[in-house]
Length: 190
Ligand SMILES: *[C@@H]1O[C@H](CO)[C@@H](O)[C@H](O)[C@H]1NC(C)=O
Ligand SMILES: *[C@@H]1O[C@H](CO)[C@@H](O)[C@H](O)[C@H]1NC(C)=O
Image (cartoon, rainbow, N blue to C red):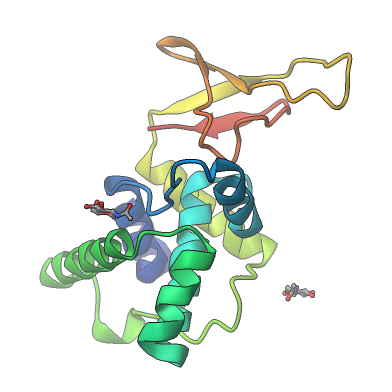
């Protein structure tokens, strides 16, 4: 994953995604408010990916924080069912990762923040999403599963997404943005 960051000079998303992958999700589900929390999460959902959804939530938080300060930040977290402490941890871990790759001589100060810096929206182009997904794939190299498409008789019925992995069949976690994904394709897991 870090070699990928070096080749493509995209250290900021690689460092953020490495932090996202190592920390627990900042999304919260307060008791009795699961539907609202799910809705808030799907509003931020990005590219059928839980990691990229967290990434998008993180970028929105950073932007709100820079532009609106503490109060907007709190409002953003409440509106989107995000745990601010988890986001702060994510940011710390990311900065640690950047420090490490700098110390290892991979990163000059000029190459940082080219991807995330001054981003007006969390609206990524197809190419950018492909780059982010490639970085995730590099990070989760061995953990690829094949999704099993189940033809539904009743189109309103939401079928759980089942994935074939090296360890056997598994169902996508109910908290995932992909819990009822029904396609022929591949999925990364951790
Ligand atoms: C937020 O996350 C922190 C650290 O994981 C945890 O201690 C805290 O209870 C969480 N707060 C809420 C409101 O979920
Ligand atoms: C997102 O960006 C694309 C071009 O990169 C543009 O066509 C589209 O309208 C934008 N969508 C939003 C919601 O900003």
